[in-house]
Image (cartoon, rainbow, N blue to C red; front, side, top):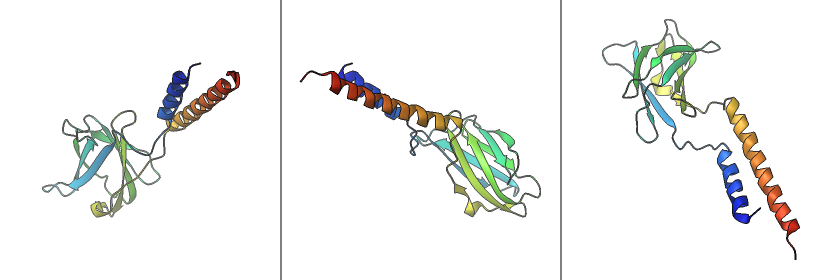
Amino acid sequence: MTRPLTVALLGLSLLLLPSAGRAHGIQSSLTRLQDLSDQLTLQSQFSSGEPTRDALVRLVPPGGQPIEVGRTNSQGQLSFALPKGANGAWEVQVDGGPGHRDYLEMPVRQGQPQLDRISEHAHPAGPLGGLNLVAGLGGLGAAAMLLGLQRIRRPR
């Protein structure tokens, strides 16, 4: 096997490794509508500035099942209200498609969201996150083996 092919395989395997950075991540924020005190507006966009169109938005109560509240419009916005009597740390999930998700943790006290205390947090990788890691490490191992075999077979 030629050296350029080995280098290409090594580079490909590095691309499969998950990274902490998000080249095309989603950034979201929540605000309260001025005219309706119980309505919240989510604004979501990709890191490029392009609105996150048609993203599925879910609310997840503490220890509960996700509640779908709708999809973002062409400007990446969605207005919704919290369920009556909401309390605790709720999660707002914005799902813009494979690899494009955002998670906001929103403290709620007596039905009122504490918008000044919202935090964005990394969510554990789904099943594909672990698969990418295994594939990436396997690719690195294969490339290392190929490099080792090339060194052994070369006449001195």
